[in-house]
Image (cartoon, rainbow, N blue to C red; front, side, top):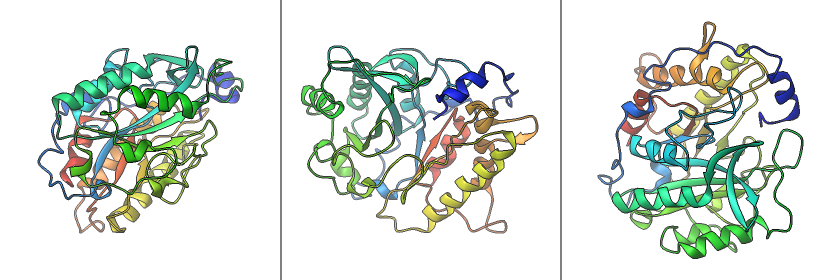
Length: 331
């Protein structure tokens, strides 16, 4: 995405744009506290029917303004724990194949000071303390080997084989149907997945799906948008933030009106050479960001537009506590 060579080169030449100050929608994650919000919901409730706050590039806290997408609450996946305690329940992880057949967490070329074992340790600790919850994961092989991206370590096993080895070491952590290579899983009800990690999709380095892992309905989840995913991540400049806001709104409305047995994932994130992730999320130079727009739109009544009844999973950069709070009210 923004790790492409052109972004890295021009990124050195372009002065960072001035992002908006923190508010209820942006950069105030720690003001939300919802460690057990799923616990009160019935076991029969479908995962697809939920309104789920999520994070895009969940652990991207290092590398500068063109790479960072989340508030920094610490390395070794401590940032993930902060997000889970706030109420985040879908996460987006990007992994590099490292020596010893291991995964390290990257955003493009930048190592995020976390390994996949750190992530699994934090997930296991959180779900052990909050067994009524479940966490949905999108895992993507990050490295393309191109300039501006990372390169996987040579001589290692394939990405899927390494992933299987992680799963085999923690057989009780994952919801088994979602991590079965040979067949995609039906979208589960909460009672099936409490205390478990659910893999939504395993993506290759250019967005294609790897084998049949994850939920069957996401078999077409490729780079960018697909039937159940809005991920128009290219926001070339500040003026294009308005287009991104509209893409998020249209998909939100479609999700709200759609079959509640189908899960939808709406990426509010985006970036480009002249629009950093923080600017797209929070706004800059008088341009309203996606996060404050979303919070306003969700708060508007029926006299303004057809009310939203379900948000699906909303994948956010730098989420604010008020926006997390609002998404959860739909449950």
